[in-house]
Image (cartoon, rainbow, N blue to C red; front, top):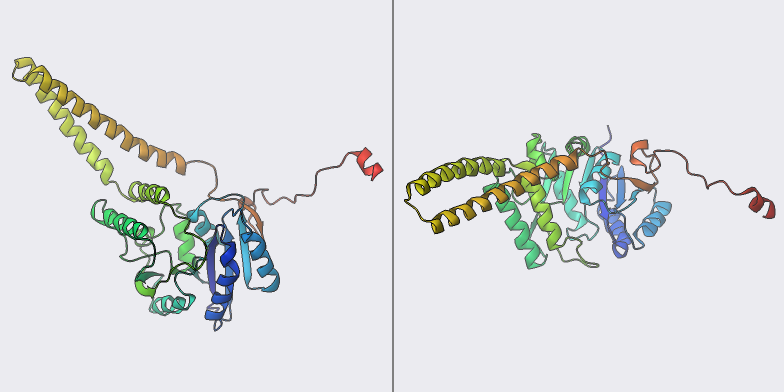
Length: 324
């Protein structure tokens, strides 16, 4: 039985890092015979794909998928895990802020019988806003929304490929909380962290906030439970205020303030329910998570933009053919 490893490397405008990532990964993992490095180009607009093509021509261990546009990291993981050719897959960012040598720490921990091992980045070297935002997001998810988030878990992780496919097929908005949700055996192990050597992080504050909403509303029913409580309290308050107003106990100013409060609660409730409906509508669309334009792998027809059909040039006009 093969015990090989697929290294999943997401790429979005990481041209400056493609060769660096390949060199460091192959050097660090040279003890693994069945090694596959799978680059997933998430619609880059720089020369990332050209560089990956050249690597694939010179190194048969390099595989790649190139999306038709930027679909996001969730799509990258879905495609990467689906096409990973080895029984274990490690997700490693192209910026290599976690040194590739740390992959061995993940593999050693996985050897103890775990399905998923997350790397906990010690001495994290990201900007302060990024670190505080990430820590606050995880704390809020656990304490406020009751979501099971393994402490210290990051995107640097090794996963049984079959388990990863099971999770990504659920099309949940986050991978980390989906691991305990399906009952996969998981652990967290410390890894070192270093500054980026090239390029800039693609995760901006607005994206972090949006990702947080996907986490909260994708894995917790607590907001809806709060809506039920607010509805009951609001209904009771309305009844009491109506009775007091009829009896002349409260004046018009108090009634007006109460009405404004109730209107605010109603609007907040509508917005909250609307967010859940948006999530439901998004998941029910027929659009696939990603479409692949180019690959050196055998694609499933449904993943290709052309549906697996050959795409020769369009027919030429007879007069043009004759003149040529």
